[in-house]
Length: 149
Image 1 (cartoon, rainbow, N blue to C red):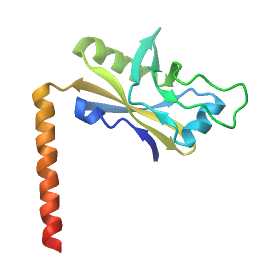
Image 2: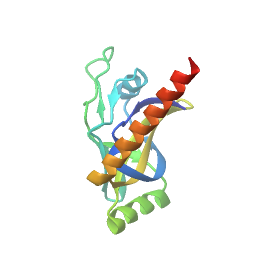
Image 3: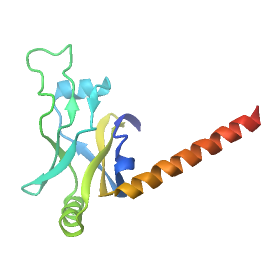
């Protein structure tokens, strides 16, 4: 799998509980633009309508070589999941107060897939712990690097 884009803030803002791989319904110019790496999921979020899953605010830049039949950049796009996965996501969101966020957009065997996660928001002190752990890890790496020289 080739990662095209990822939501870098997701692991900082949320505790990731479970991941799902979903297909996405796209137009031709959107596929070409995504393959060129011109998409962003930083502001995107997942919602439910009539028992179906949709991703909103996913930005896919217009494809330059496309004609007048180009796509809208931030339109609502349908995610393709099994019924059991949809039921699991809906239940966890309503019952446990969890949120569903997109993590990455990947190219898998010629198909575009969106990895979404069932997540719980972090509190401020959890974010501080994450920063502290990251700093400690960075210092350890630098000290090991210094000893190697």
